[in-house]
Image (cartoon, rainbow, N blue to C red; front, side, top):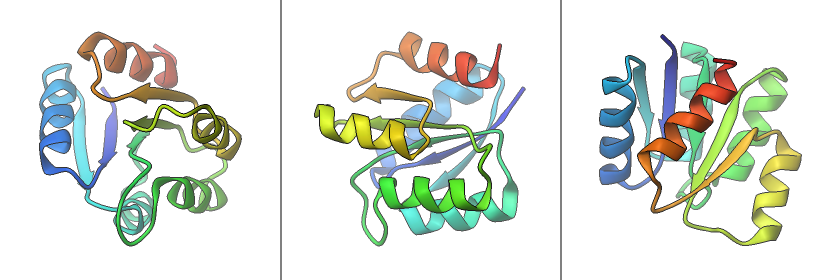
Length: 119
């Protein structure tokens, strides 16, 4: 299965996503802000990133841009409570492949992950 980086400043969201993805057979890495996500991506080269938008130090949009600059083929899904169209559009324009609105349904997350991984 895949190595997936979960970047979210809320520990309970990371825990919930980690449990869901681990149960589905994936290996999960975690980051609590955008800067950590960029550093982890460069070091670990995960197959997929689930990225929150609103985080301290570096927000998710800036992290997406930094990761895509490092690796234009990076697969990123935004997972955020910000469902505003402008932010969704900017995330997609920055290179995100999908947008999951929190609170999320497990089936929606697993479906988006499968599509992003080409399964």
